[in-house]
Length: 432
Image (cartoon, rainbow, N blue to C red; front, side):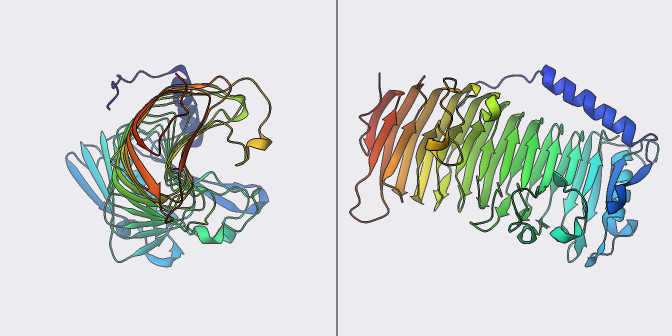
């Protein structure tokens, strides 16, 4: 069930973000093409920024650059950050329709925390990853921890593809206390017309890929993996973005395979195999009383294999906004827990810890069609809505049996309004 695709119009929030980014570019890069290095206090943590020059004059048409030509070693021990950023300077500043930076095969490139800043001179910027890019161990991140490892900001028309690997070296982070902020491996902020394909992403300290304030994103043929017990290692997190398509990918991590957060619309997820992990989630929404809005999300032809949740919507009491026009269709379940789950009492995993407040994110127009397979939990369908209720719930052609022989399954509802037809287990708890 496809929702109407709306023409993107920048919101006031996005305009403010873009103005803020321009301020960042102006203060961090005072001359086009100049590289800056700063040191944070006496802790010696190096951070690098590069703004591409528009005056390099590499030439028109197709430009192909190899990171080895810019001094990268690729032995997995030498810090190649400087070479990568010098190559980015040339790539981002190259004139012409298409410029390509090649990260060659059979090499391992150790790269520290870096920020790649746009806008670039070319309308299309291409990074082809054939080798391996690896993050340093956690103890090498001296000083304050960053929010991201490889950060792209304001780069429009960016394409990152290839058969290579991005290794976040997360196992050196996962046992650290919660107060230690772990970086996202790959972060995109205000990167419109973004295309990601073909790569393997593994063992991020936190989220593997974050897409924030982007319009027009395609992510396809990705393989994202981390151990099932690795904390907060979401596969793909999306926030404040529109027109995002994720397809033909495998995601198995320690948290949500895909998480769709506030400010998102027109999100399509097709032919994704998820597991291990926490399923494909809308949310969490409403944290800290936020007004979060999500609409026109369509998940189709996906498989949940051994996941803690399947199709999930999670909101925190006290928030506002809405989650509406959401569909999950033709879903295969293999011993998945909580196959169909609306949780409006998402508070540290315990409803008893939720504050007693009247406000809640409004949930409406949610459709579940064509779920087939097995549940590892006796609650195959759990619609736990707030006091204000969920409306317009549709459940059709669902056949879920237990992965445990002889175990009966149930459907339970709390303040859920809608209709159900042809379902196993029988859904008799929906209100009109």
